Structure formats: C-alpha cells, structure tokens
Length: 192
Length: 223
Image (cartoon, rainbow over all chains, first blue to last red; front, side, top):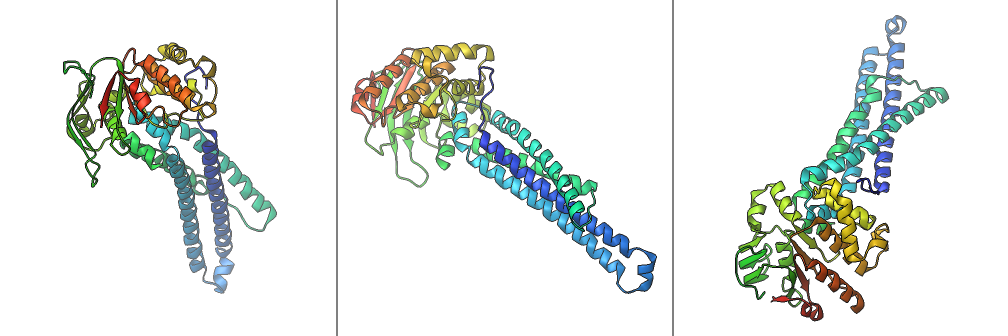
C-alpha cells in the first residue's frame, strides 16, 4: 500500500477465486454448448419427413429424451459451478476471520466490512467469469473442429452459469462476513 | 483496585461484577474498580483468574452476559450488547484501544498500511490520517520500520506498532492484554516505556502476570 488510502489485499485468494469461477464457467459453457449441439443435431436429423415416415425409430421419444437430457446437463453444470464457487468463497472467508476480528476490534461497521469484502471479491469473480466464458467458447469451438461432436451456442449455454456464479460468489462472501462480524471480536478470532 | 477516588467522569467504572462463561464456574467477582485519569493500571492475578476476560469485557471484546455494571466512557457495556445496534457498539469500540495478546496485527501488512486500515475503519478524516500515523510512529520510534512487513518485525516492534495504532486513533482508553508475554527483559522494558508514553494522555490498563510489569504501573487491581 500505499499512501493513497488503498489497503493491500491478499493476492492468492483472489487468484483462487478467479481460477475457480473461470473453470466452473468454462466447463458450463463447453458442456452445455455440446449438449445443445448434440440435441439440435439429432433432433434435426430425426425431424426429417423421411425418417418419421420410415417409422424405424420413435422420433418423438428420442426428441423428448434429448430435451430432458439437455435440461439435466444445464442444471447440473449450473449447480456444479455454483457449488464450487460458493465453497471456495466460504472457505476463503473462513480464512479471513482473524482479519474480521481485528477490524471489528477497531470499530469498523458491519456494513462497511461486508462492502469492503464485496468490493474485493467483485473484480476477481467478474474477471474469472469473463475468462471462463472465453475459454468455454474457445473450447467448444475446438471440440467442433477436432471431433464429430456438434456444438450450438445458445443464450442459455452461454449465459446460464454467469449470473448464478456471480450471485453465489457474492452470497458466499457476504453471509460469512456478516455472521462473523456479528460475533464478539474475541470469539471470531478464537474460532479460526 | 485503583486508589482513585470514586468520582464523576470515570473512564472505567465497575460495580458488583460477577461473570461466568455459560455453563462454567464463576470467573470474576469484583466489587468495585474505577479508573479516572491517565496512567498505567495493572490487572494482575494467577493463571485462570480471569484477567484476560476482565480486559476483554472492559475493552468491549467479550459479549457474554454478566451481572453488575461495567461502564466504560459512561456506557454500560451490557446495554450496548443487548441493544443489538451495531453502530452504537462499534462507535464505542472506536474509543477503546484493545491490544490482544497476539497484538492484533495483520502480518502481511506494513505498519503504515495497518494504521491506514485502522483509521479508515474508524472513519477518521482522510486528510488527518497521514499526520496521525507519522506522529504515532514518531512517538513509538518506528519511523524506520513503517514500510516493512509486520511479519518481519520483532515481538517488541510489533507491540509498539499495536500501541501506535491506538495513538493514531486517539482512543480514550487502552487495554493491553499481556503486552510483554514472551518478550525478553530488555524488550519488556522498551514496551513498558512505550505504554508509559501512551499513558501520559489516557488510562492504560495492563493485564499481566508479570510482577515486574505490575510494579511499573501506578495502580493495581489484584484478581
């Protein structure tokens, strides 16, 4: 730090947060785009009048299975990303309880403490999510180029994990900080 | 017990204090204790006598319920705890400089950063912070060390940084829990000189098991 009033923040935890969010979002974008691609491709092939007329397969059943499979993959990826982000956020906040206790000793308001943590968390999480989006899209394009798997970019496959991750990361940061700040400084530090 | 006369404007006023942790045996039983003017006050007692708990109660760090009265700077501590008003409790804490046994510093910060964080948390006007920090470091002889990592400083230097935090915040009371624990004799003497300097302007309550330290204090409470 400096003399400008800025305070130093521990760098490693920001890197961990960014990496965690980026990985979660990237996998979500990649797997959901592949899932939508496979679904679209098969649905398209089965939807032709020739296939339906042939009656060899139950096209409606397969389309229904694919739709549900896509929903399951989408939800699973969003939940997985959210859970990973929340876990990392929670663990990181637990590791900063001593800092919370010390600052509460000095008389910092609970609201200011939470706001500070949110401000610290936002850039690495947003940055990680943007990097994750880019990596996921590049990964999905690579899959399309290098394998026979089809890929479809939809609003859901591209954006579903992003807001959930941001909201969960914010919650995982603010809730533990708020709870810890409500305890006595002595017990907060003793708990770590 | 301090030899103060009971009077108005007491910085610390304890009456009929009975304290025990939930489910635990009685820990504190203090009929009367008062501090009204600047100076060093020792709180001594054997291990387990409740010295640190007493310091934490006076310093606004312990929120467990108690019987009797603990008034610090005219505020009954239990009232602030029970009111559940965070702002009132924190404004009260800002006026007290509590130095825990581990000094209450963040090791990856420099002393300068630590004081800036502290003054920011206490909402001291930004324009005043540099001057206050410089004066506090000067009083503690830390001018040359303010940009080193706290983790790199010796125990005595860290203790002086902890005291500098309180000076910079311009607190009305300092409570130091075992400020000389684990320090050698020379460093203990340095720390007592530093605490003595702080005690020129505000009461400094020193929780200690060290008789040598207690003998350097003007008043004494035996637990």
